[in-house]
Image 1: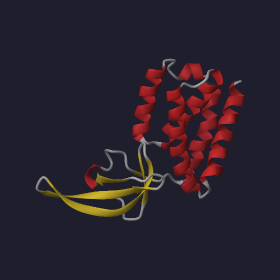
Image 2: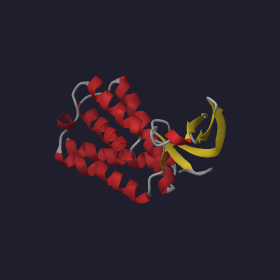
Image 3: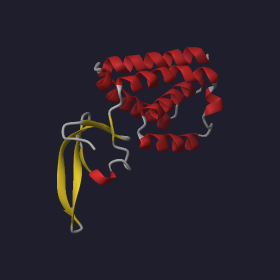
Image 4: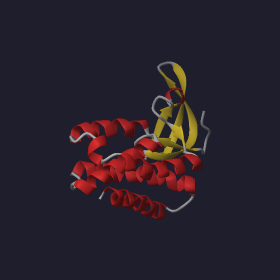
Length: 171
């Protein structure tokens, strides 16, 4: 499925490079593993090749997908208010958000990012919400800046600029 030196996305953790494919004896049977070295973390993990899809390991998004996701970030919000499309209770929202985070889908990460920015126009975000917002922003920036071949600082500015547009539409 993936090859050595390919960059992939591991849900909830970010972009990693497949350093090598390792064969190990597990329970008397030989199994192959992707050895992932994360780009922005000092962390390496082994992911069984056979279960890479079930853990959500995926290729980097295409340029076209990124463009669509970023336009979605501002388009969808015109039709609903923050109160209408997110549960008011943080624990319910967080459960929903964690489920989306585990999937690692770029569009769903943008939904969380958008939702939290809209909520922040109505009330101050809680510590948990701020932490999640920072985590999601990091994941988005890491992948999108690689795909678009721009610096992470510039990507952060762009995402925040899009969110300012969201806030202006809501107020």
